Length: 199
Image (tube, rainbow, N blue to C red; front, side, top):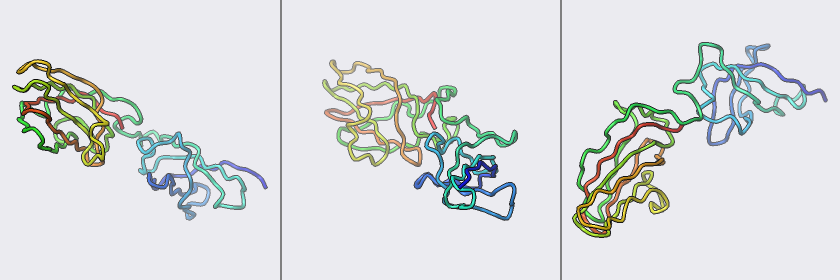
């Protein structure tokens, strides 16, 4: 049972099963599907646009006993934006003094448009500030549909009425780049900027 590494072209990546489809270079009519991919390779660094990859066959004669070890550039197929890191973009005002009634949930899409945030971003770097005429008011920000929004970002509590509470940090997004925002205790006014993202 000889082990061998072969070059291939990545033709697909399934993030749900962490498997890939590859076309072997030495036999261009041979496409393997459902090949496991190493965990250090993520969805942001596995473009299915013809990137090259290295496939380890644990048994050279058994095509189903393989794993994709690495994905690398052809020189023209560099993933944009850069994969797997924080990327800064010019600050962009997403929410401009919007009013939130206590107990009411609002959903915003933070990716796309002129924001510089790509649709596949997992999270954004944000700066936000809010005020409320009600003491102890606070706001929660979470990925759209989160089962426990309190497990994410909480702004406040406002110790004094009409004071401005500032915050910045990293905010997770849902698969469509959306967040849910909710005010508690009293009505609030919120402004939010984004200035970076994580893929």
